[in-house]
Structures are given as structure tokens and as C-alpha cells.
Amino acid sequence: MKPIYFPEPFRIKSVEPIKILSAKEREQKIKAASYNVFNLASRDVYIDLLTDSGTGAMSSAQWSGVMLGDESYAGADCYYKVQEAATRIFGMPHIQLVHQGRAAEKVLLPILLEGKKYAISNMHFDTTRAHVELAGARAIDCVVKEALDTTSYYDFKGNMDLVRLEKYIKDLGAENVGVIIMTITNNSAGGQPVSVENVRAARDIAHKHGITFMIDAARYAENSFFVKQREKEFKSSSITDIVKDTFEGADCFTMSAKKDAIVNMGGLIGCRDKALFEKIKQRTISFEGFTTYGGMSGRDIEALARGLDEGIDENYLRYRIGQMQYLADRLSDGGIPFQTPVGGHAVFVDAKKLLPHIPYYEFPAQALSIELYREAGIRACDIGSFMLGNDPDTGKQLEAEFEFTRLAIPRRVYTQSHLDVIADALINIKERAKKIKGYKIVEEPPILRHFTAKLAPL
Ligand code: F0G
Image: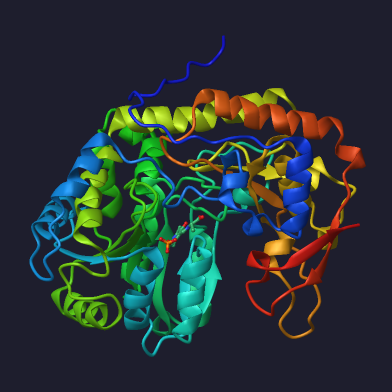
């Protein structure tokens, strides 16, 4: 029997035109962009899958909230609304607004890592790793080994490896570990979920050793929907209850609201301890702005207050995860390899398997991103050796564990027909895969080179 997908629980009131350029025009545009998709103008892109962050479509309720946004410097009405929604949903007594996820990391991580040497996470997102390192500590990833095999099914590939976690704490010394971070869902492993059982166990290990337990909550709602689908204990629970159970006993969280809260800009920090909250407020005033607006305009705060509840609506999540599963099934039927099972916000296509003749130093995942643009004006991105860059000591190209081309799906933006275009484009590319060639870098900056490097076909 064909699986049942869940249709959009909304109708469309406002549309934004997009157009597809001719194949000849696309060839000119990608060449002019030096074969780097970050250099493309978005007007030249038909379906933009660069990220699911800040690219979602707000609802009519959010847009009407924009007009009600209170722009007062202190004590704006929307500030109290966000406080009410966030304390109710996450069960944390103290909430601080900031302008996005990395701002939350910049404010909180140096406090937690003062005098410490390590942060351990199931997997640090790039900016989280950067802020751990900027605070003078090292970031250690500790994901379960099942995540590394892209072909095998496992319910919770985002989980922390608890045995290795205990071993790291013993070997490094608990007094040197400033924080244990649970990233839900696990973006870098492919948007893979973490079970509540695993969150609880990691939290208990942290607390047994007197270490702060933090959640990176960017995709907390998608994670909760997977928990409902896959974790027996929560089969009959509401998403609201699963979110509460996930956050229970966590000491603090950071959140990029640009994902599951479906806003274009925004972030939150939450914590339980009053003394920690005082420090968070002080740093927020220096880096973001006064505590009641935290670097955001009132209209964006109002939209965020409303988005927090929309993001955990079960009908919305059934449609959202249903979209991912529809696309994944079409790709499986077409023989396209990807991180299995599909995650919550993106399909991570395994370019190493699709283009086995292109070695890592000729960037197979980047080559596949370029082919997607050539084929159908789709913009995806490389999460592989091109993004990883060179060894800082030897200057030699590093080899990534995975060569993924990430297709991140914005929320409430594209229809099932768009998903069909994506699947058909990849199937067409697979048919001519053997003829696709790799790329060389002709110009690159020393750090974060993938954003600006120039490439040429081989
Ligand atoms: N944590 C996770 C797990 C993320 O995925 C991101 C952003 C951040 C923190 C930082 O949040 O962008 O609001 O500052 N991820 C985006 C992505 C950029 O494309 O995956 P931010």
C-alpha cells in the first residue's frame, strides 16, 4: 500500500512569484557565480533549498501581529507575550530574547565555559562549535555510531553515545567539562531526532558529575513529532507534553527561533538558575540590547510569540514531516542514496554514493549542488569536504566523513509539485551521473572558505 501523506493544513492567501531561467541562462549564471551557489542572486533560483532557517512563511496571524508589535524600548507588550508563551511551552522560569541562535550562544557559552576546557555534544552545529572555541574551550562530538551508516535504518540517529560520554568525562575530568549540549534535532547528522530517553540519560550523567546540561533547541518541535511517532512511551502524548518532558530538568537552552518558531529572525535563551539569568541579562545588554527586546524589533517579537505555538501544532507537524517523508519516498523509488531515514528539515543526499568516480578533493557534493542548479534551478549546498576546508597546520585539503548535498526544505513555502521537481531533477542527474565531473578551487579565503571560494570545472 502507498503510504498516506498529510496535506497542507492551510490555504494560500499571498504568493511570491518565482521563475525558472532557461538552461542556457542557468549555465551563464552559475559560471558567473564561479560555481559557488552562495554567489547566485536569489532571483535566479527557482527552488531555494540553501537553508530552512529564517526562510519559512509566516501565517496570517503572525503577519497581523507584525502590525501590533510594540516598539517601546523597555517593557513592550510583545515582550510579555513571548515570556508567557516560552515559559509555558518550555517550562523554564527565565527567558531572554536575542536576535538569533548564534547570539544566544555568544551570550551564554562564555559564562558556562569560564575556567573550563571542554564542551561535549551529540553534535555541535558550526556556530555552536565556533562559540565554544571562541570561549577558549574545545568542542567534542559524541553521536551514536548508527549515524555514520547512511544506508541503515535507526529510529534515533541523533542520539548521544552514552558510553562514550561517560568515558570522555572520566578521561577529561568532570571538573574540566563546562557543559553537555544536546542538539535537537541533530542537524549535522542529517536532521536526525534524539529520543527523550536519551535526553534524560545524558542529563542524568551530566548532573551526576555536576556538569551543566544545555539543549540546543533549534528544531525542538520536529524532534518532538518524531518522538511521538517512534518512542513507545509517547505514542499517546501531545506534542506539548513531549516538549515539556524533553526540557524537564535541563539547566538551560539556546534556540534559533528561525526554524521551528517559523519566524524570519529571532532567538531565545532559557534557564532555571536565577544567578545564571542575571549574568545572561548583563551580557545581553552589552551585545544585543536591553533585556526586553534583546536585539529584535517589537514586530518580530510579536510574530515570534505567535510562531512558538504554531510550530508545535500537531496538524502542522504531521504535514511538515509528511512532506519530508514524501520527498524521501520519491527519492528511494528513484534509487537516490540519502541519509536514511530522512530527518526533520532536510534530505541529505549521499553524493559519495551517487558520484563515486569523483574523489573528495574534487568535491562530489558541490558538483551535485551545481548539477541541481543546471538541471532545474534548484539551490542546495555542500556539507562535505568543500565545506570542511583545509588542515590549518598543513594547508592540505581535509577529507570529510560524509559528502552530503543538503536539500533543506523551508517551512510552509513549497508545494508537493515543487517536491516532485526536486525528485525528478535528481533522478535525471542520476541517469547522467557518470558524465559529471568534479571541480577545483581557483581562489579561497583562509577560513569559512565555502561561502566565498571560486571554483572551476575540471
Ligand atoms: N544550532 C543549530 C542546530 C542550527 O541548525 C543553527 C543554524 C544554529 C544553532 C544557529 O542559529 O542561524 O539562528 O544563528 N542553522 C542554520 C542551518 C543556519 O542552515 O542549518 P542561527
